[in-house]
Length: 139
Image 1 (cartoon, rainbow, N blue to C red):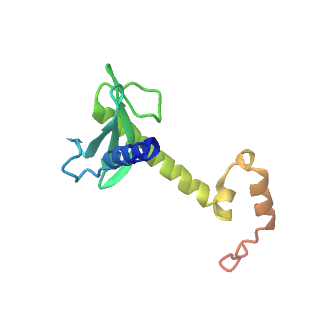
Image 2: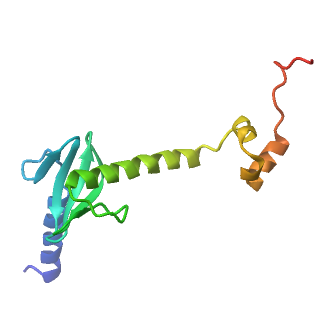
Image 3: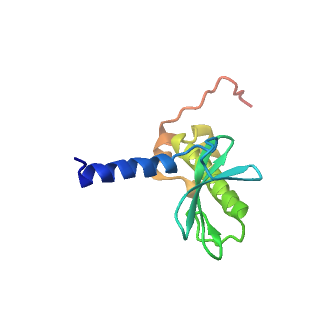
């Protein structure tokens, strides 16, 4: 006997399998636009597409009746490629921001900042910093 729960589980697994089709799958609905590959995921309005660039998924864009959007900004794009470029640009900035957060500036870089721009933690780091004086010559 098939229970309603097992039937729902089977339908969910089939649905997820279709959503997760890679762009290379023959059953995937694929659009190639410029350097981007759009793979249809589902939905009627908006239609959802995963966006790939160089074999890496960079995000999702949406096709509405009158425009495209990408979920990372509030812009309405006339073309799918514009929504993909906006998404790609956002991801590049996010990657740079994350890298900047992960690697705090060195003490030499802090010395180049304006005094008013330094945080309390940066001031504390500079207080403990002793520059290497091996190349300094007394004038």
